Length: 342
Image 1 (cartoon, rainbow, N blue to C red):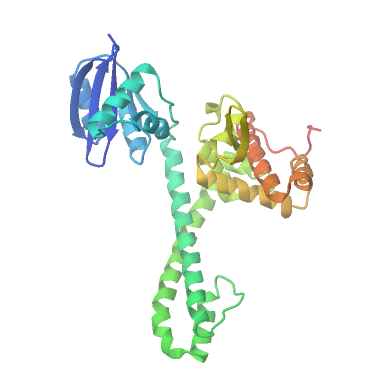
Image 2 (tube, one colour):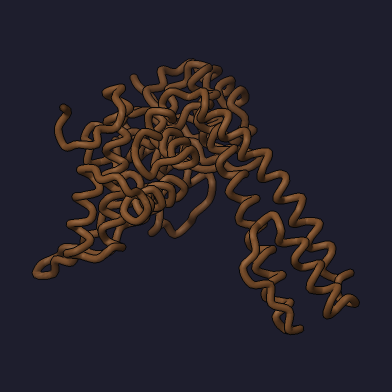
């Protein structure tokens, strides 16, 4: 007889539920949230486990990889679908959630989620940390600009490197007494700026030695950040059975609601990886507005912009860019500027 297990993961402990193929409860327990502890407890049961399900979450990549390495047939499942299955439960606890996951795994009522490789997760950490430092530095710039306007100090247009010197110069001239209050902000800003530069150099070093990223950068509008974001977002180009699923995976396809006589198409779903979606949109906008050399992709986007507007055309080009980059990775080819190869 085959058996199925469900894991409801929390920070310290994980609720485990094991059921057989008829749905009867076999064992329940609370185990430490560690791949070794979970795999050891499941191994002591001496049962033939068909699948072991856990919901996608912050700790899921670590647990999934550790369980797989120890021979446990782990499956990472989508959270939103499981939430729909447990939404009407009168009693909701970790123990009940583990039971629901076990039964969903047993009957096949789940959607498996792709877990990125360890290398992709490490590069995603680099991208996330770089973006966080950049956002906080820009937030500090805006805060300093906004607060100084109340005292009649207008910074105007100034480069990133000369921002602090400009602030100090104007405050020395007009409100020297307030400089002691702004100086800590400038010190933190300089620390963020230097740390961001360190991570950005690391990113460029990775892209410089990565053949996939260098191939992606043959596409007009795609730079180092966009190339690395898309590569880590796709992770495995063979996991998409159809090319139209690439754009939908990154939330670049429109929503649709159809019921009875109602048939309504909405804006894009914005589901999936936000970092990749933003990178593709920026690359598409650069292609349509700043790249001077014409290509079949740009010509298609400009025709669409004349009919539907620049914003919708940019989203459409971003969706097509995702497909193009995935096919380039599979075919191991550079970007083709013309519709057909010469």
